[in-house]
Length: 344
Image 1: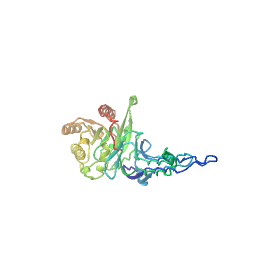
Image 2: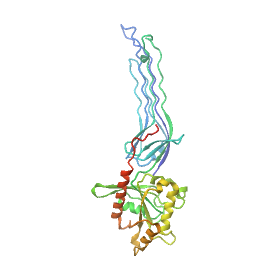
Image 3: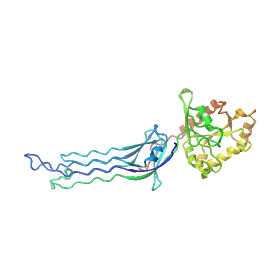
Image 4: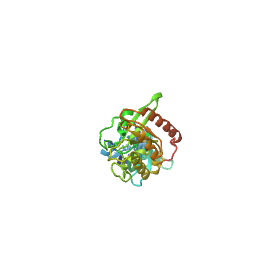
C-alpha cells in the first residue's frame, strides 16, 4: 500500500537523575562525595533510507519515544545514556511541525538525518558540586525531560521525469516498456491508483528515474478524481513528459484538448510546476495510418511533438535520449544547496 502522509508523536528520552552518594571505605571515614551523573536521554532521529518506499509503517504506530537515560550511581559511576530511536523514512520525506506547520527538514538524499526530538540532559551527581567551601554536598540534579513534538510527514517522490496525461494515455505501458517496473495495465481509465517509479537503464551507464503519476482529469487541482493528492509528487521532478493519446475514442477529448486540460490543471495547482521543462509525446501512433494527427497536434499547441508507441516501442530510443539531454541540463542548473538553513 502506498502511503505518502503520516502524523506521529515523537519524544526524546528523559535524562537520568544524578546520584547523591558518599565514599565509605574502611580506614577512610571521610571519603567525600562520589555520586555520578545521570545519562543523557536518547533522541528520536529520522533517516532517509532506500529500503523504505512509503510511510506505511508510521501509520500503524504513531508514537515514537526514545529510551530514558539511566540514573547515576555511587563510586563516581555515570548512568548509561539512553539509546536513540532511529526511524527509517523514504527519500523525499518532508518533516513538518504539526502545531505550527513549519517545515523542519527536507530529507532529499539517502542517509540524510534529522533529530526530530532531542533527548534530555542527565542531571549532575553530588560529586560535581564539591567545592573547597562545600566539601559534602547533599544535592544532585534531576534529568531534564526530552523534547516532544507532533510531526506531519509528507512524501514527495524524487524522480528525473514525471509522466503526466489524461487517464488511459498509456503512461503505465510506457513505464513498463522502458523499465523493470510492473504497474497494473488495463484497458480502462484510472488503472494506476498510486505513483509508480521506474529506472530506465541507458547505454554508457546512464540512467533516468521515471515517475508515473496517476491520471489527472479536469478539476484535479481542486481534488476531483485522484487529483491534488498526487500532483505534489510531480513537484520533485526535473522534467515533465506529457503523454497525449493521438487516437482517442469519439467520446474522449481531442489530442489538443487533452493537452490543454492537463496544462490548465498544472498551472492552477502551482505556477512553478507549470513552468517546468516539458516534452510532449503523442502515444499510440501505431493506431494511426499517417502522421497528420501528430502534425495537427504540434500546430495546435505550438510545440514540438514526438511520435511514439509505448505498446510496440516505436520512437522510444529517441524519446529517452531527448529526456536525458534535458535532465542533464536541469541537473547542472539546479544543484541543491547543502548549506541551506533548516529549522531544528
